[in-house]
Image 1 (tube, rainbow, N blue to C red):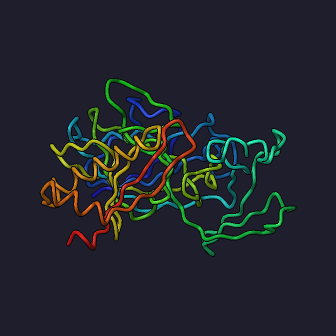
Image 2 (image 1 turned 90 degrees about the horizontal axis):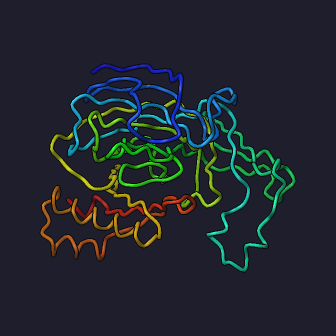
Length: 306
C-alpha cells in the first residue's frame, strides 16, 4: 500500500470539517510532522497560532457516517532536542484551601525546559536549575495528546477539549503501536493529529506533558458499517475505551458503557457475562483532568478474553 510523505503548510486549532490536506485510501500510510502545543516547529520557531494546532485533516476514501476509522500509530518520534512544560499543578486537582499555597510564578517564568534525547531514551529537566530536583531524568515515552475525526453536524470543536470524536484526551496510553478506533461522522472521516508529548503523567495535571514537535507515521483502515459510540483502542495487553466529559463520573459512564457494548458486539459475551467480567477484571486509567472535558479510560486485559 502507498506511503505518503506530507509536509504541512498550515494547521487548525479546531477539529472539524475543514478542507482536507490529503486524500488517502484504507491501507495507506502517512509520514508527516506536527508542531507543539504553542505552535512551535522542529526548529522551535513559531509556525502557527498556539492552542494544540492540528496537522490535517486527512480524507479517507470510502469512509462514511456509521463506519469506524482505524488508525494505527506506527511511530511517534520527537524531532527536536528540547520540550517544555508548565511548572505547577492545576488548582482543580488540589483542595480549595491549598490553592493559595501553590507556587505563583511571574508570567515570563511559567515554563520549565526539558532536554529530549531519542537515542538515550531520556527526558531531562534543564530549567529551572535551582530546584532540589537538579537535572531530573525520566524515561522518554512519546504519546499523542490530541487527535480525532471531524464531529457531526458541521461542528468545529476546539482542540482544547474532547468528545465522541476524540480530541484533546491526553491519555498516556496513546503511544507507538496502539490501534485506535474512531466513529465516523462525516464523509472521509477527516482525521486530525497533533499535540505531541515526549512524556506525560496521568491526568496532565500541570496542563501539559513535555510538549514537543513530532515526526509521526500512521496507517489507516476502515471498518464499513460498524458503528461505535466513543473512541476505542488496543495494545498488546488491553482493549480500552475513552469517555470524554465533565464531571469525571460522566466520562466514566461513557467509557464503561462503550466497553460493555464492545464486549458483547465483538467478543461474543452475553449481557450478564459482560457485566460479571467487567466487575472483577476492569481497570481504569485517568486521561485528561485539566481541560474543559475530562477523559476516563476503561480497560480490560486481553488475557481474560481468550
